[in-house]
Length: 187
Image (cartoon, rainbow, N blue to C red):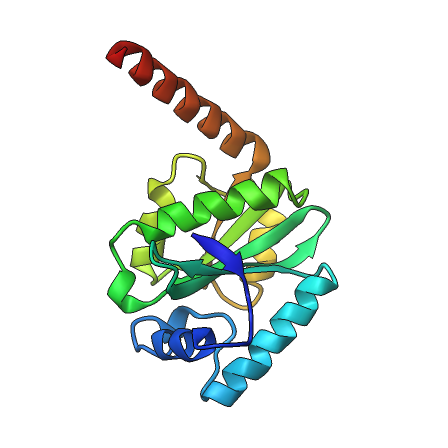
């Protein structure tokens, strides 16, 4: 479902073509207007990850095809900002939920992240609905007022959402318990 970003092969061409779709491009954090610029940004992303400044993964489908990216930017004190985009042909097919869970598992349990923030443009209804469907996400405009005010210093553009390692872990434990109960009933 996820793999480390790379520059070689067809991955960059496929991702660039998916990224520039008019329903995707406005919501991409690091926009590229050409394939060469996309390669440059990807190289910079890989280098920044090596320095511990961010985490970046390519989202792949069940056949190993690249379909988008998921990133944690601006990592500081065990917290960072999530940035995800998935190509238009893959919208509404469940890839977002699976990619996030794989990414959160890695970030929280392997890489020492404690808090993941999501800043979502208030007009990005699709992303707001997707975030609010996740039971481990809380809207943090009030509870993280300092961060919210920093994001919206000039004007109210973003809503702020938070995923804490503790809340995510509780959700995962409940899921595991529910799965165990289902298997026990089937036996």
